[in-house]
Amino acid sequence: MLGKRICVGWNRLFLCMPVVILIVHLLSVTELNQQNNFGGVHKKKPRKSDHLILGPAAGEGLPDRLQCQGTKALSKMHFGTSLNNSRSPDRVALVTVFTIYNSTVESRPADLVTVGNISYGKLERSMAILNIFVNFIQAVMPQSNVIILTDPASELPLNRDMVTIQPIQGEYSRDKLMLQRIRSYIAFLESRLEGLNENQEQVTHFIFTDSDIAVIDDLGQIFTDYPDFDLALTFRNNKDQPLNSGFIAVRGTVEGIKRGKAFLQEVLKVYSSRFMESSRMLGDQLALAWVIKSHPNFNTRRFSKREAFLDKIGGASVLFLPCSVYNWTPPEGAGQFHGMPLDVKVVHFKGSRKRLMLESWNFFSSSSNLSDMLCLILKSGRTKYDF
Ligand SMILES: *[C@@H]1O[C@H](CO)[C@@H](O)[C@H](O)[C@H]1NC(C)=O
Ligand SMILES: *[C@@H]1O[C@H](CO)[C@@H](O)[C@H](O)[C@H]1NC(C)=O
Ligand SMILES: *[C@@H]1O[C@H](CO)[C@@H](O)[C@H](O)[C@H]1NC(C)=O
Ligand SMILES: *[C@@H]1O[C@H](CO)[C@@H](O)[C@H](O)[C@H]1NC(C)=O
Image 1: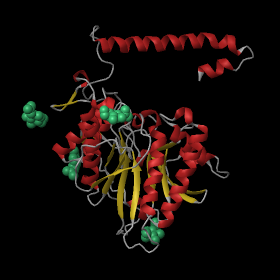
Image 2: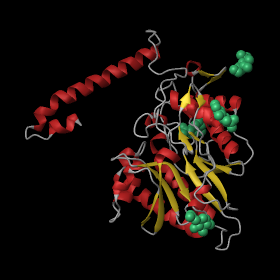
Image 3: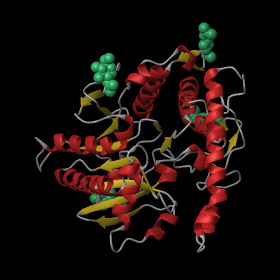
Image 4: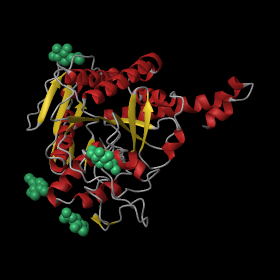
């Protein structure tokens, strides 16, 4: 922000100089530190913690936020509540894109991290995250299937009930992964359309998510609570990136799938034409926001409230769900989310919080208490961890 303000002047080149030099210097210092860490010569304290650090719980004193004493929940969470108590016979499948890289497989012994009393290399860590993703779904939505879309070239060492691995051809290299992910979603929806007819008795809805999430309440309810949407996205009050691509729901009817697919194709088009320089990260979120905001009557001010709303975008009826409930992330819990709402349904362990995902599952499997586990997450999520 400072950089921008300085650069507005007529003699912008001159004024920008000090800033540029500072940034280059900071970058090289960071690199130096990394080199030292790799070399292992200077035994510095690691910047990121290798164990959970419990801090204060954000949202303390707020009646609609989780209150904790230690890792004991004092509030009653609103699990299983819906706007609409009609039970639906429909099914829900969670769909994620997951692939393994050669560099992951070939990790060195020095890359080991320990959680509980198990040590994980890079591959084991990735697989633990995927397994815990499945564990949470099977704990809170036991009727739901999990579908993993993957590179036909990668062999996932995963064999679990209610989990299907569906290879989809594509280019899954790290720097193309976000682009490929949308392509895989589209190819998946296409494969589902085949053999589906208008009078399907059993409908299966799809929720596409990142795999570093914990589902902690039944997500099937959105399809009955909001019976009119084709596609659902999660939003937050962030000007540049109001939409998170880590949660996209598509109604499993023929119409829903067709419109969801057309919407994603539009996002892919915008991504490929405008945001290719961001193909490794964030490009999909920028493209999503672009598609939504370029819709003439869209009122972005609705992103500042924590309420779900529907809008027509292109041919699709799009449901916007608040991230604070459907895509709650630990660092934002201490920031714009102001703690953890009592109706939270999905926790997203973004960035360096994968350790917390493993620790949370361990905690839940020994306590069987989701509310207490949420206190653990709320209190320890401000810290960045070693993976
Ligand atoms: C979870 O623990 C809290 C207190 O820590 C308790 O009030 C609640 O009843 C427990 N829930 C379950 C399902 O055991
Ligand atoms: C990974 O390794 C296998 C076997 O060594 C090789 O065939 C494959 O091309 C490699 N994949 C990538 C993406 O480098
Ligand atoms: C591993 O941890 C569990 C739970 O903390 C404990 O019961 C068990 O004894 C530990 N096992 C070993 C080999 O340390
Ligand atoms: C409740 O669900 C039914 C069946 O899907 C739907 O027709 C109705 O509109 C829903 N009501 C509300 C208030 O959402």
